[in-house]
Length: 220
Image (cartoon, rainbow, N blue to C red; front, side, top):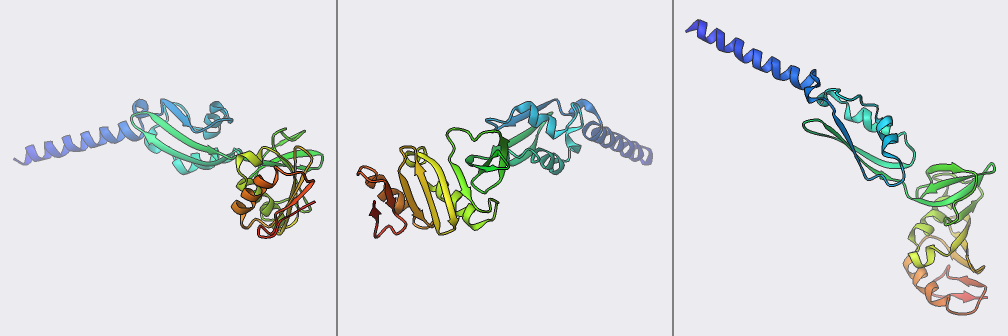
């Protein structure tokens, strides 16, 4: 009886040990493919290289937090989620930052998202993005953040017409339209009301539309 018990213990230990080796050290359950989803402009091979996970590395021992940290070094990405998909796939799901405006700094155009994060630096601003002009361009600067909030809140019918946005303070945002007309927007409050009113006013002849106070608008 004792011999049988000892045999069963050894057999169980052997099975557990083999399973552990199979999962944690063997390439049998290693990373055979990397699935990347959610990327639109960032190439998949760039994300895969940045992840830095070797093929056949045991999937169970991949440090997901470390991979996420490496992938998030790509500044065009807003989020990255890393998951194991057994038996041999590492899944990387990303969300890219959305370009909202461009800022000229030192002769270069910095493309930024709605939070003021620089996505990329170019020689020239992309033609469809509004150029933002503020005194101290930076994420966290009140004037910069107010201007970006205004841009983000504009409906598509208006956003596509904006060519240049200026902000001297968080309460003094204005922008120029593609047809040369100017809109004085004010602060980022009551954006829906201002957009609705402005859409109606743009049917009228004027050079300047002041909707900074939606209850009392003026045209010049």
